[in-house]
Image (tube, rainbow, N blue to C red; front, side, top):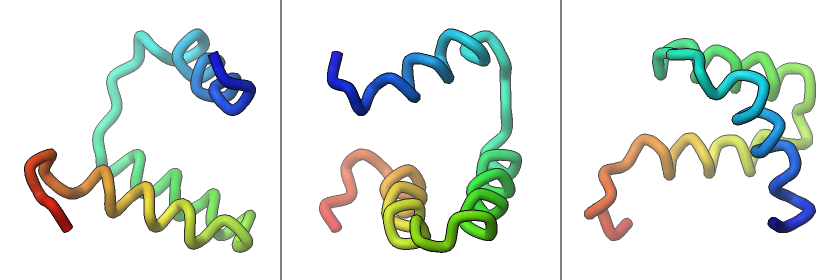
Length: 58
């Protein structure tokens, strides 16, 4: 495990059994960017990556 995976592991451990909607996730990402605008670009890139089908080469 990479050091950068610690947050992912914590998320999985604490909330891994929950079911969420993508609308909920989008709202949480908006809130995070509002609170931490310096992360707007990486959050936008992650959201774009999640939104595209696996076979999309763009």
